[in-house]
Length: 136
Image 1 (tube, one colour):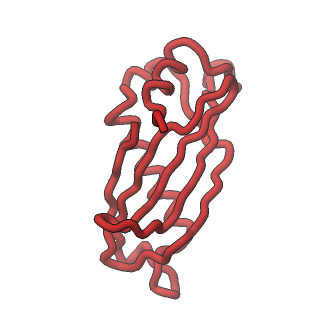
Image 2 (cartoon, rainbow, N blue to C red):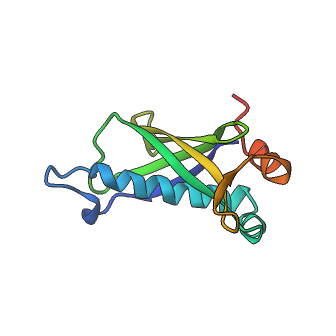
């Protein structure tokens, strides 16, 4: 199940070369993940459990420089769910075009704040993540 978030590139997103600074993509991707879980993942119910998805690795491939005024479309989907971690795949394109700006795989664990450790992904949490998984 792919979800799309749009972000317009502003001047404060740019670096000295007048394209989006690589670190800004981390913020763009995070914004898209929050939007994805708000729209598709019953975020209030998940947060009430005291669990959190914690990023443990991000791998980003930068492919095309976005510049001021560009509108970015960020597609987000759960790529895989294992027993101890999962991967969210995100693809950034220029909105309305096939130009890929960046792609990222974000590895996460489910963290139990009370126990202060990552836990096995099972039960309702696994079911929720699997319903958000792309069938491709």
